[in-house]
Image (cartoon, rainbow, N blue to C red; front, side, top):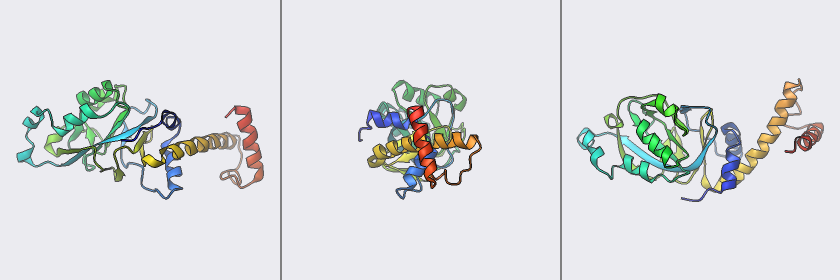
Length: 239
């Protein structure tokens, strides 16, 4: 796993997934926003960390009785204990929320180990309790049945698909109150810097629009006066 620079992590905490998607689109990456996952607690602030992955396949009943949890090397349990502090656990549940990808106890353990967040394209059980924890968690919908009834944990830290997005271990995962975006690791630094600059400009535009200004010539700034006004605004705001 690569090392996410602290300054890049801090930048990504200040920008939206929408802005990041636009920056990625400029580089030809159109499918980086994980589909149909939502935060259990949208008030926790941005989730940022490198992807540590867990892959489920459809459960085969003779290989997946509840006794498998007695194995200390069970992939789900092992992943919870090995996901690095500061990383985001990303779970491939095949977009199937009929059974839970994890529950409150496992997510609590991730939180206590310093993991930055957890994402599944399936569901969590104990979702009301998870929503009260101090760890960002994203899922499709609540799901009470144990994962064993439909999912079989198989692989840890391999390339996966989550909500139709390819995720490689070490990719940078950012979540906000709208959802989750995945940034290829080698692009993280430049995407973060560009997104910060985009956010500054969009804050200026938002203020101008709320004053009644037309977006024509302003967004994008095709009129020179827009660039002049932005430079003056930025100087006045210290941004």
